[in-house]
Length: 219
Image (tube, rainbow, N blue to C red):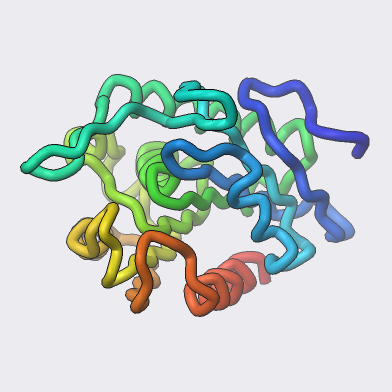
């Protein structure tokens, strides 16, 4: 593999050492970041994973991108729902493209994200269970209006989620992580939920648990 393929989103690739079609993990960064951010974690992840880190489509400033615009109000974080829906569709398209371009195992496609990228991971996993087998949702939120597009519960059955949030998160408060937990507990999915004494970040403890969870997904 000489470099990233020409797909619908700019991205970075960490090849897999797996002998056959590898499990695929697509990473989605947070608001104002870029594809290099979460890619720094790949050295900690199972080498059998084919890891693809995507850049969000909306440019905020040089080197700074978003999946959708947000506003902080007295009522909480308000999202641009139209842009979020568009980005979710675009990310799903990209995941399918990446799986085909890099020869991934179509039964072991995972999506992971942090903050706004976590919102994208959850939305795509819930709306496209035919594509995504498992999703890691780190310090995110899922706008209720967007999850209205979820398919029937029987189509989501058996999909797996790792949800992690910091109890000291001052950007996306812990109430959002707990709301995601409640939503997923109402669905026939396999949920691993963790809280950590951390702010809006990925602590070493969180990363260790994520690594363990990902390992179980590819066994």
